Image 1: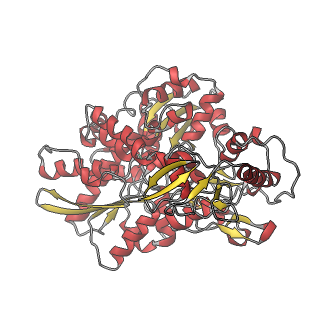
Image 2: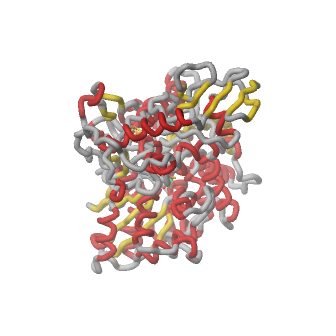
Image 3: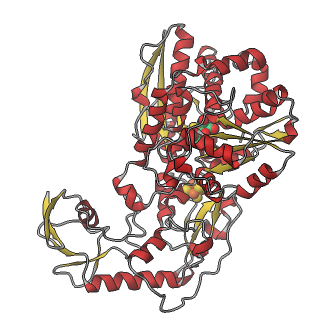
Length: 573
Ligand code: HC1
Ligand code: SF4
């Protein structure tokens, strides 16, 4: 530990702390804009200036290591004036259309302008002139809103190891984007949306589909069915001021009904169905010398990462469509048939924590009999916007249940939304199918938690199955490299594109960089899902009575011809 003095308070802090961390640890808040703990510590924006005794110039505290005996002042006239001048300069070149900006109300730049008491912008700077980039099905990039903080560049390059964003041009003409002014839809971006999640302003956002969904709801000839991903319920409440980790499943269902959807189904049902199909697929591959390791295919960011960067693993992917695509296919076949509705009149809307799902829903591979399995994907944030627009008092809504049959799900389905959840759900089912016996303990703790790569060896009857879980494509890359070099060998792998899995997907409510310093988002949101799992009466996919019913009435057996037609696909180079 080292002893330092900040604003006359003498404190002891670990020696690897920065001055910023030391100050915030005692409640002294130094403003930051580009800083993102462990991801972007580059001192680019110069908002975090402080005075250090003995130093001539003001210092950037986010990269300044603490030193024994250091004396720091965070709130002097000189500091305040310097910060304000920096901010004013930034604002003079910013497109300040706050009222119509998607981040109005939770923009870190707007908040800072308020907190630092900026009253007017003394000069009008030359504005960046670059068009809005709408080339991607998932991500919209607006260079006029960009403040060049570099957070998206760091997350894309260092965390996701995709690296399609960088600083281009020089000096005043600097912009952040793909090389050679290409559209983000024309480079091998995986649509994960992690760049949106870390953007402090409205420079990166999802491509919205809200208007199309309203239009469908308003059309009396359309039967509009909505489904919600597991992770949405773990975070939607944050948009309405509820604490992180509040589970809002019942209110979410109530809100969707009030928005006017004809049926409210649960993607968790699709997750249970995926487990049946994927579990049997794994057993088939294990017994018949199929391609191993088998790797999950439910995360569309991961599938795209595999296609671009590791095509040699494409045959390792499970042939299962992702849960919401499976459910979409079932809605337009089984459900349509049962209820005598022409599938052409059905509109399936998926509420997802994910921006890559927007791209996924448009993939040709994911359709049946000429119909797209899923018509529109809205992020958790977009759903919150619709609820606000409809002026629904979300916090005071009653808890309601999903609609019958395709709304019935198990604890196994709900944990899909956290890293390790798909693996755990699969093991619960595969173990019982193989042994014919009930598991004593269905909590596979080895695959839970936020460690980048998790491994376990699981006994399934006589089979010793080696499994691994990776989240974030940077970790996936590490794991795949270990497999390629022969260093590691597995039978079954879960990969999710986003660090933390879907709970921290690119479509989830924004969390400011400041809150990220004190809150473990992955853990808190995941806890909401594990709590829901615990509270469920049925916690294994194969015990879902409605899953049994659908196999009996419609699909036959898992991996049957019909199941293959509707629920499986194949991604090729
Ligand atoms: Fe996910 Fe999935 S878990 S991919 O993270 O397999 O998005 O939540 O809906 O489809 O079920 C996302 C979450 C989601 C699918 C399921
Ligand atoms: Fe990079 Fe993901 Fe953003 Fe694409 S969506 S630019 S891959 S962080």
